[in-house]
Length: 215
Image 1: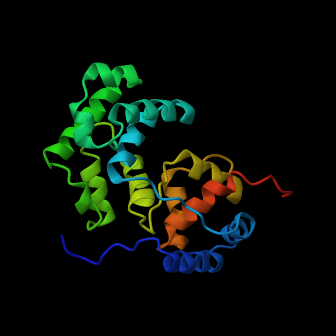
Image 2: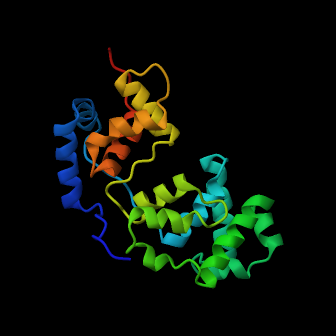
């Protein structure tokens, strides 16, 4: 697939992005000042990022971490890989805490990687839309999970997840909206932040941790 190589978040692009956000949007400029330096932590390996996203669906962060530790213990002393998990029995993964549905999702992810229908190493060379199209073929992986993979694993600089509840809550809070914005409203606000919408998204999430201020 041809086309320009997608821009990644590097110290240089993040610095340019923060400067752009300060110029383009006074509301976000104030958030940048309050939050401080950009500190997005990259995810672990590509497979582990996707596998952990499946584990974490619809449960608390603490429960997800507990289940993942059990899965990692089954692989010890080797790291968790698609090939390793594919060799584990259903009973072992169920005992670790995977529901029947998540077990099905995990099997599909592992087997697509093992038989090379999904080659994670090539995703870094694809444009964002193509990455999303590839990942959403996996059972249990939707657009939001694919967007998080783009942002935290591939470090793409211009990803905006308009359906993310935290993003919508931040937009409502910062821009004085009467309700959570719909997709069109969210994307309209975010248009000014391109091509650094990943940086903007991180600041929106962090803005939810700020103490309330007088209107």
